Length: 231
Image 1 (cartoon, helix red, strand yellow):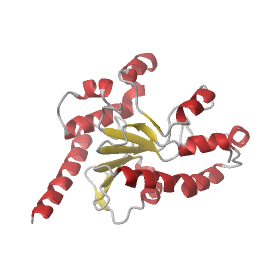
Image 2 (tube, one colour):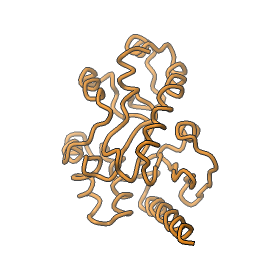
Image 3 (cartoon, rainbow, N blue to C red):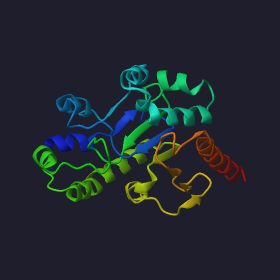
């Protein structure tokens, strides 16, 4: 591991860390090898980055609708929990901005087009990792504890991890204990830690019906906790 990787590993995420809802994904979809890597390092040298208002909508026009698939689901969940505006307006103007009520981080720090992508020569030369397993071992030992500490420090009301195929790493990173399977939404709820692990955020895995069930799960948990506190 070298200094460049340390910058990526120390970076926490996007949005407002004081937000009540946190979203945790797997990694950046952009391939760091095909973008301006020096600019990425400069940006990620900060602990977190609020998204500029309107930038999601601007980039969607540039890159196509597939660019917003994760943001669409986030916005539908946020407006489902607090229906103050429609989800598109929220996505375009508030989502992950400093005025928004959410924060998004990723488990793994290197951005790639596919989770399974690994360029042996490039990643060894750039970051010092000979194999993908060496990279993952370092991330789990070094980055996961810092993500956990940052999460505990900011104490969001609820956390949604998306990418259920990597549930073991979500459980490891956030030290999750007893899980309850929600078969109708294909999710796992950790009620003590107020964490929900869902399928990946796209139209195929998270249609409106499953989004509604996700919102209901969060609302029901807080209703239950409020009742218990009052008894």
